Image 1 (cartoon, rainbow, N blue to C red):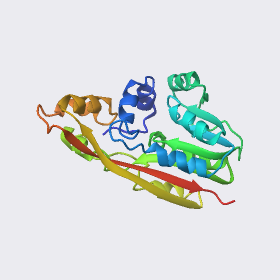
Image 2: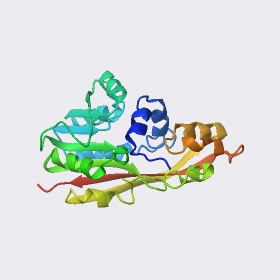
Image 3: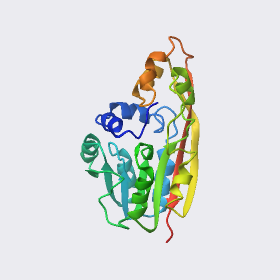
Length: 240
């Protein structure tokens, strides 16, 4: 079973952005026409922030989007030097750092964003506590993650076993309520369509949890092949 919070695995995976970009198609709307980041950005904009922190910023596209929509000062952080390099190339103020030990003062930000990354954090409670700490009273954390049933049909196809997400649609509120007073969730469900077996194999090879099982992929699959898409946005707030 692949542990998505294994620090060595995560470091190796995010040393390069190619596989990440392919996986991102499951929520950016490239293949579904529905971008799960849109309600996340809307939740950030609604808070009317002046200072925003994105953790796990990847190549910086979301940080750019948030900055464009809010006009706020946006700082970004990622464990991967390569991702920070790519984000800086986009003009994002990004640094290498760990959400479990954020290099920022208490109450420094109005909004924090954690998009599809909390399930990689070894000490999840500590990471969420740090995000709560750097928010001002009344601040907002906006999180994106997946359901444990996301891409279930693909996992069943290759026999990779059940989802190992430890911050998911199903348990995210429980984790957040340890540090935040109010939590709400918005679900974005639908389907991913793969035109043929080659596209299925390409996606499986890009997956952290499924790629070790790519040899199990049948020689013939239904074409097109459909897998469920199940993303969720959490908005958590501290007391003012």
